Amino acid sequence: MRRLLILLPLLAAHPVWAQANDLNAAIADALAHAPALAEAQAGQAEAKARLDGARAQGNPMLSVEGQIGAGRIDNEGFFGFTARNVTPLALRAGAEMPLYAGGRVAAAIDQAKGGKAMADLGLADARSRVMVGAVAAYAEVLTARRIEARFQQLTTELAEVERQAKLRFHAGEIPASDLAAATARRAEGEAGLAATQGRRITAEAQFARATGHEPGNLAPLPPLPATPPTLDEAMESAHRANPALAQAEKGIDIARAGARGARAESLPTIGAFAEATRTRDQFFPDYRADAMAVGVRGRWTIWAGGRTAAKIHEADAGVDASEARAREAREQIDTAIISAWTGLKTAHRMVEASTLRASAAAEALRSVQLEAKVGAKPTLAVLDAEREATAADAGKIEAEGQRLLAAWQLNALAGALAP
Image (cartoon, rainbow, N blue to C red; front, side):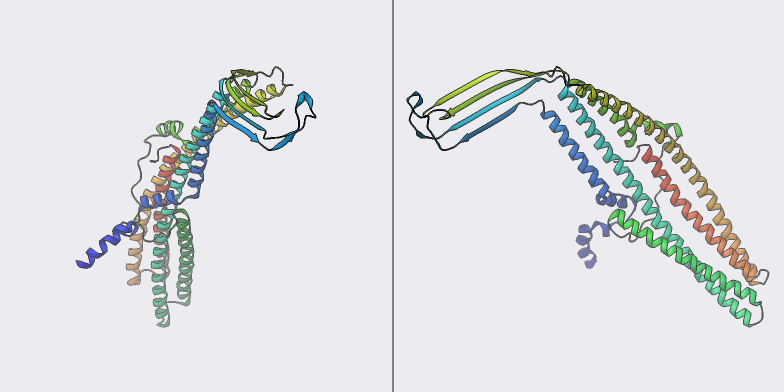
């Protein structure tokens, strides 16, 4: 008990030790580790900075500039001034407030808002992809490990069958062909084990890449997440919440704001200003001048040689292209939803069928083993039953992992993954 009390603070300080490494933990680790998320978050911060810059275009601007120096002025007696050393000084302070920009500022703000929204959606899309990738890596590790364990069991059993076949061959109970078949099946089992070991090593490496740490002991596959009950509901959810589709539709708003900005180039700009200046020794010794002015200034380009019209045509073409991309994105999402929905339903049926197959193959293996013990079945029949049972178990394990992944993929496309 005393040792347990000593270990409790250590377990609290290391939650990875204190709790099982389940799917939720793997997803959380992947979200914390993924470079794609870091990139998307940086893009989000960049878009926010652009939005702040666009909004700042409508704020007043204050500026101060000046210079001071040391020199000598020689007017050669003009106006009676003699040559003298001077300290020329010039200061200017000004403020300007945009009053009317023809819609340029509003269009820039709308474009930046659209860019910020697209960055947010890009982050959501990246999160969905990372989460589905973590589920795939988790399921693949468990699948590969279980299949490897089944092949290890098969290899052990085949080695025992080969040993018994050798004994029976030397006793004259079976022909050499049966012994050769047992040896061949044992080698086939070892080859299958080597393949499953390679798959397991690859799966663990992919898991480490996704989460930033080795898989360790993993909890079994969790129950399936709740998915949209019908295809129509899945489609409706995707149209409402799929991040990639929302990005494409937001691109239309950005393009339209760009078109408004291009048309605003042909309109005047008006702003209020206030300026104050202070000048010393700029022209004559002891020269002094202070000034202040308040007013309104404007600028209007009456003719730009076709530049503005070209920008408008370019922006209009960008709107058309954005609308086409949005239509294409919707069609792609619809196709992907149908594929994911069908894939999940197929995965359900595959799990059911593979479970029945595995049960039947296990029962057949037991029957053949009993019959072989009394001499009713040859050794080759046992080996065939072993191989069939192993293949059936592997198929069942594979189908369960694929079903879980299919459910998460459907939810990701439908925009139904939890944040």
